[in-house]
Length: 218
Image (cartoon, rainbow, N blue to C red; front, side):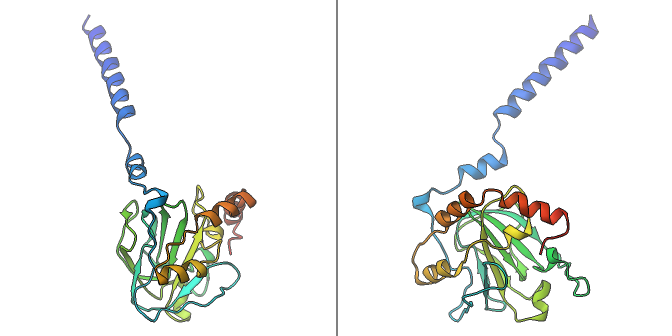
């Protein structure tokens, strides 16, 4: 009889726990509830200071390199920090493409755009943290292969992929026109351009992830 009571109690406890677990919102649900709507998207130029310069081109793929050594890096829009690399593993003798960025931050913006910041100095956020537009997240540094060049911030914008594949994350669309507008206080969003690109090349995430697994991530 006692054994039967224990079994019944155990089953009841399991069912209650499952029910509570199913009804309790996850941290991801909570973050999604905080996501701002399109009419609430506010954009901020990502580097503080009056004399920030960024060339109109970039080597091999769309991105922007912004000057401003040791100046503050600010979140361009509200969103969630999805990845932080806080150890600089770049070795010039090996020059692994996956470590060239040095200290990096990846953020998923509320506008469904992924933002990538590399060659950072001091990091001010943690993985999983929600940030607001204009919030300080790091400083412009010289980590990674920026040690062999001028101190700068690598700034990339891309679609959000299931993984953190470097070939997409490092940059898919040219940030310069958006940086120009944000610097002037014009609230232009890259969301539509990212959506068009995703429809045009829907397999880009998979292709980049496959290349990375094969060691072809450049």
